[in-house]
Image 1 (cartoon, one colour):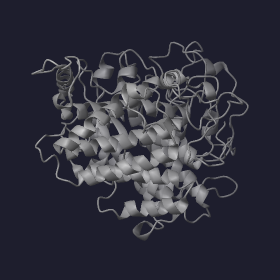
Image 2: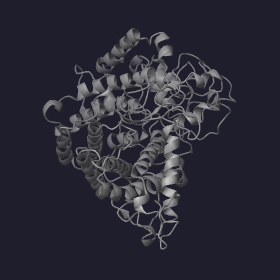
Image 3: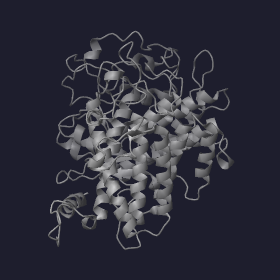
Image 4: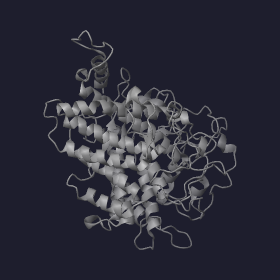
Length: 605
């Protein structure tokens, strides 16, 4: 995205310059008529992708996708860790939207306004879901009110939904009759696709609210389903932010690729996610080689590199089947005691070099940056794992990856499928959606696998005007089991297992969504949540909401500590807020919940 260079430079010039100043004009003050609204909108869209990426990290750490530091839950992140997220939300995105709105309204820039409103609503929902009460109505008043009070959470949800309704109405209007063009980083100018995104965000908001008002949530979701604009259902409707391969001025590569593919991996992928994907339904998940790139294909035996090989398995870890973890049986895993999966619940998730970290593991960092498993082709633009076993420092490794041309998976069609499955299980949706939870479950799996593979094969979903990214097509098609014919067969096998498999325990225990074996609503939701969680790789926002809203999937890997403290139901307020706002008060602990979270499920393990 070399055009980003020109956007940033031009925006700097536009905002910093002035012309035809009167003698009473302040040369250091910028008038609204001097601001280019398109360049502000560009900055909003770019900063929104960074906001999503940052927020997803915290959510993935809590939901066993990515390892977190700290010896217990309250110390997995300090308040300062959230400063960047907060600053980007308020000083950049929301403040820019505050500036843009009156300009867009005055100039009839309906498309600028609609995009800004949709992004504002998503950011506001995320701030509430992560922190609880946050400032909004009194914000952006400058020196007239430097200490804005926080608004109540439920009122902010109402405001976000109002913004989504306004955005949808504006997307239905003729785009920018004044003639100005909005550069659309997400949908390449398709207002119809933006409406689908707006409806899908409304679905996720109302699904959260089902816990406190089931009837209201059902009616609201029904209204969304009946809206003629529809939901995200097709691949080219996926709401993603795309990166490119430019290395400087600006660096347009995926930030997780930059952090892990230049000098060595810095993130630890969670062992539990790799364990589940390797052993679930007694077959390796077709997405595994797309999600993860192994820098070594054999388990290391050097304790200087991986200390846990000399440590005993924590006594509270399940090690032989059939066993249940603290939250119950993990879905999709065969409970038979002979299943080799049960010997891999600690340290190494498999026997073939998948190298991550166990949940809330506080140990120091050994020299394993060129050994540990890192992000693959999806979603960050890394490399498909074809048993290369080469470190990222090898000159050929990053060059033969997608070179950072990845995506932020903000709202994918598979997410919509799994949300609809949950809504139908608990709310009984009307019409064509009634009783369709199993169909949505199957469609969610198929759509997730297809989108993961197609991104690595094609480098585009056709969702905007950008050209295709570098791909892994030749490598994937040549790799055993991943050419079109073999891969299709493996997907069919995986989906059939997810729908029908029963394990070999003494009594019949369904591993899949099997209609022939009695399963209660919660057991079915446990399976839906498991597949939704796997599909959410790269999206910690929805994963964090999912586990708090449902308590599923069950049986997730415990923290290393026997008593890790209370699971964070919300996060610490950032220091930049708590220390600089006289009306802000830091939380006493992380037990306070977002207003829609009234579940009784114990997540403190």
